Image 1 (cartoon, rainbow, N blue to C red):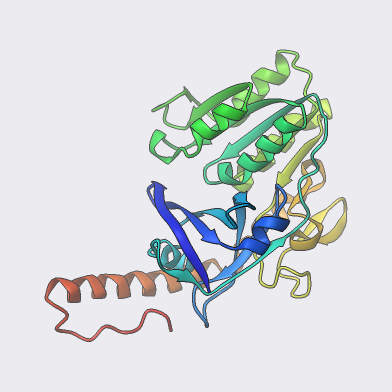
Image 2: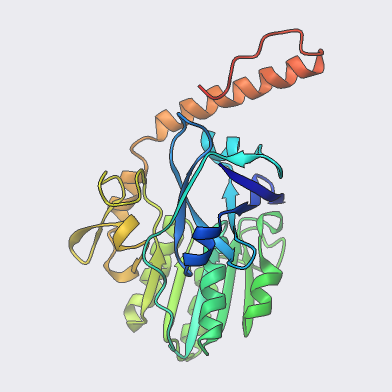
Length: 295
């Protein structure tokens, strides 16, 4: 069991957890992730480590509640525990001197971009950060990234904060303005990462993306996280999660991620119905029997 030290919502359905995991915290490097299970028969979910404190023996993860397991995880609070946390997994980000590094975080992908931005700054790079979200209320880690960035730009789809537009618009402005960019790192929804790859391809700007395919064991044995990159089959859990954006087959990645979408919707609907039933029972004093949600 892995005790939860802190738990707080950063935005609607987006929650930050600090978890006791001393061995993982000691071995962690920027770009790596963990796989966790909330309960014994639950699914295994990969989540990137957003921070690690080796001295305190803790790691932090940021969870967006989009499916049954992530929503269940987000019901947990400090003082409770997570059954399994395995890691650190994956290859760390390649941290070296690139000159100017543009870090792009879309939505909860910002949590993945943050530790790499910090590491790039410590390596002596000039860090320019572009944050994107649908609306102001969904932005996360803005102040943390501002403190480690030489420049920071915020883009919102609805114009409720920062500038209105997509992150690729700001990236195009930087590129067209003649900025000497050594590396672009983009992390977020697949369509956003693909758009970034196409924006930098004509200028042959080195661009990396962190991929989020379906993943089960995290060791390359199950094959669930297979991606096509550089014309060959690779596994995000052991060959990534970061890949050269200009080599990734994003169309195939989107198809594979959609394979279990209907089953995921069904599981989520059942979970939410159970939650509503439990709430109703609590409101009437627990007079009805609640089916165990962890089945």
